[in-house]
Figure 1 (cartoon, rainbow, N blue to C red):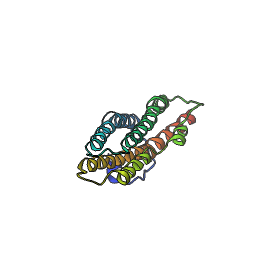
Figure 2 (figure 1 turned 120 degrees about the vertical axis):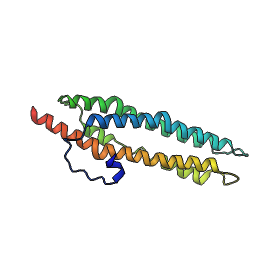
Figure 3 (figure 1 turned 45 degrees about the vertical axis):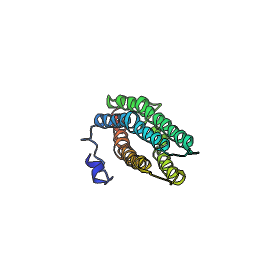
Figure 4 (figure 1 turned 180 degrees about the vertical axis):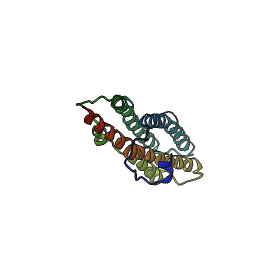
Length: 177
């Protein structure tokens, strides 16, 4: 939490005191938060916002389709982490070495899942009708902005804490052999 709240992503490269197991639990809980709570909440609010308009919004189905495609992308990303990366790291924590996989494979595949959410926000701002009361849309946009920040923080934990700590553990395991 200090890492995120301080906004200073310099790490002293001493991962001895870092509990990788705790970081994995944090990341798994974040996955559940995004997939089971935050993204469905945004989707419901988005549906409510576009349905509240008096006129038929021509882009309504496009907004929802774009959002659903984004959620699918996030789900794939997080499922890969849960099923492949975290299982691999549990083996590394036990001292095992895998010649077919290492954390750099994940790092190379680690895409930024927040860019499509930013794109959705920009599309809504540009194409949502500016008529009448847009309080619901404003609420959706604030939720999207909040989700952007949360996902960026999630990525920073992975990039600046999790991956380097696992790399260090991999090095130590190889040296023991």
